[in-house]
Image (cartoon, rainbow, N blue to C red; front, side, top):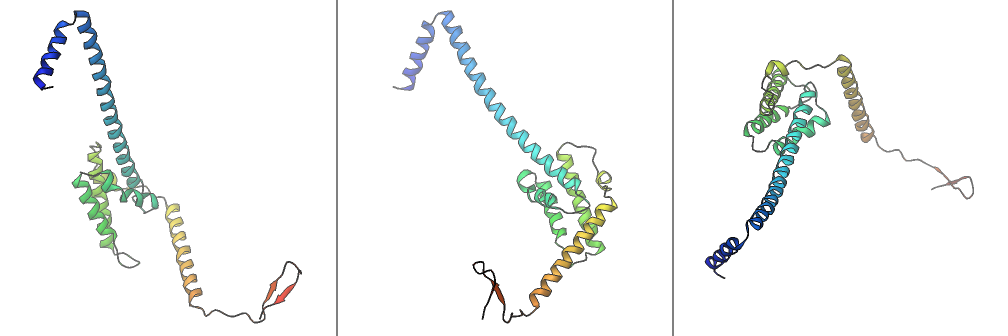
Length: 196
């Protein structure tokens, strides 16, 4: 059926309806459109809210771990390009920060430490402004609270890990000693058997 004929038939049907039928049809159509519109807006709102919550979570994870690096912070940093997709200023600040984190050797220089701090603060400032924290500046994020007992605990943990790595290297370098005339326990007889 051509489009013109369908339009003519629809107009004829609408003209033949009584005023009550026209009102009821309009109400039903409006109700259906309202429900569809409500569902679309609701889905959009929840997706937007979920993305914003993820962005705030990433921001707070990085902000709360400024003075040190932990697993939660690493996970948050690695999700920046997904959570803040489309925000080139934040992604570029993250990439600059990531470059400064690639430090050679065990002891970073003062310049390397300052570069890490500077790029981290720049990243935090850009994220804060995007998230609507308008009054956050470098001065706000420049003085994180980091108690001595946490620093001492981290140092102890690092020393213990270093000791464990050294012990493993030492053990790996030792020539295995073969046991001569070892005894193996036999549960049936309750005594050892010589293994040759």
